[in-house]
Length: 72
Image (cartoon, rainbow, N blue to C red; front, side):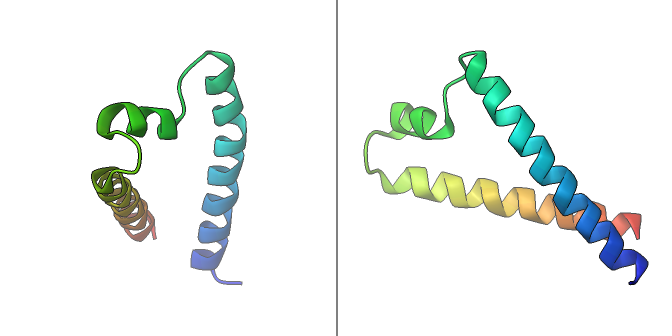
């Protein structure tokens, strides 16, 4: 396997483990979920909540891609 492929696999596994460990911990501390925050900000069924979510996903994806590209 190439070094780039190994880096991508390790990054994916680390992100999965971090999410699996962090979300239950945050929930135990009483931090509201993203859904609760979106409903409080925009109301039930708002299109703007979807737009904000898509923008956040896009920015995280581009940021992670930039970091991976700069490290290889």
